[in-house]
Image (cartoon, rainbow, N blue to C red; front, side, top):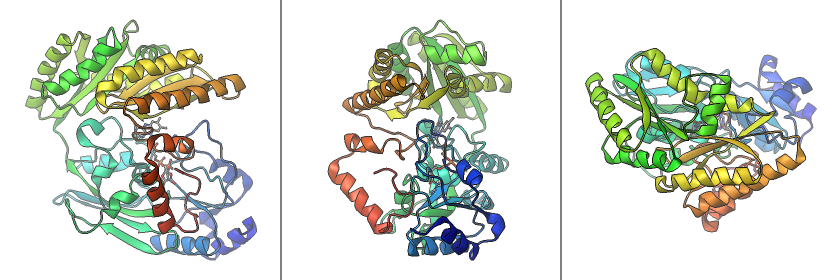
Length: 461
Ligand SMILES: Cc1cc2nc3c(=O)[nH]c(=O)nc-3n(C[C@H](O)[C@H](O)[C@H](O)COP(=O)(O)OP(=O)(O)OC[C@H]3O[C@@H](n4cnc5c(N)ncnc54)[C@H](O)[C@@H]3O)c2cc1C
């Protein structure tokens, strides 16, 4: 590989100096992401901020010619080391490609650059009555490029699906610098292999998203959120199925266990019931009339499922209070110990209580403090473990617990990631969850697109 100086000299012929960082201090900042456990083995040699597709193509032609690794980076909030530049080289940041290029109200589409912040897009389309549902729970900072690369989901997946359900077409720069256009602007597209879907969730390993055409839907007229408490995990998870059986279709069915309720109350008091084993947060949306009706029906179903203290938000303040409590859970858990790590496992809904109780047992066995939250409507659970990563015993215990949690998940018919991805952090475990032939074909696909393995190397496999 080229030396840092040679990479810098080469890139300075392609980009203005103001769009290149190379000092050790600056590169250090781009050597980390939202993952606490994964530190990059190397600093990037150079960080670049391209402003056009053509610049990206030129950078990739240069990188490919000289076999320089390139790692894409949105806001760096992923939790699995997906943008750690473990092999050095170039980090490519898209904060200067953050424009919404078009919003078409009639066709209900938007065309965006990769650095657009998800929350900004949501705000803009909502102003004209449209809706982009994917919400990686940190939408004030995370980018569309990152959401596409991770196929981010979030609380509203139960009703609306994940990012992959909202991408109609992509412009991609491939590792050799050539441009590929996939999909189009239409809601349906059965013209050849669905290559767009191949890039979504590929964690920046196959190509660089330089533009995306998004599907939008009508914004529901109104939404309200309900909170209900339970004395057992079984009752809470059973009530998820009872809600679904009753033909109500909430946008969200989220979960907090007793530890997460107590931890939120400790640091961000919200008036939660700390003596209850679990709580569900259920959002319903639709017309004003339909959510009134659904709200009443939901209360009945929850009562029959032994829920107590059922409250339905009547005002924006009440709505925000419930959601702030749920969203504060990660930050509150982080205050318990020097570090926090969060995981992302998923099982068929019928196995939820076994998974949640199993995770609690495993963490107790290894003396780890855990707060469990999740998008239980999807069967998706996020154990948030508070620990001191510098304490060797605790770190070893965490690794043992993590592997046991994965084994349990897989034995229950689930898999290793629902929405955060594999990245560098979970690649060791992927053979536990993916058929060996399927894994071989994944590697062949990677080789086909990126024979020199320069794009985000060392991720997924
Ligand atoms: C507190 C917290 C809560 C979260 N909750 C959720 C949740 O509920 N649901 C959920 O799905 N996720 C959640 N996440 C994780 C989520 O996947 C990411 O935070 C987010 O989608 C990543 O966006 P980003 O812009 O930060 O991407 P980054 O972290 O910068 O990058 C993520 C991946 O995308 C690649 N990438 C970035 N831009 C491009 C591009 N233009 N072309 C190709 N590849 C690119 C990178 O190489 C990397 O592999 C959470 C994270 C945090 C910190």
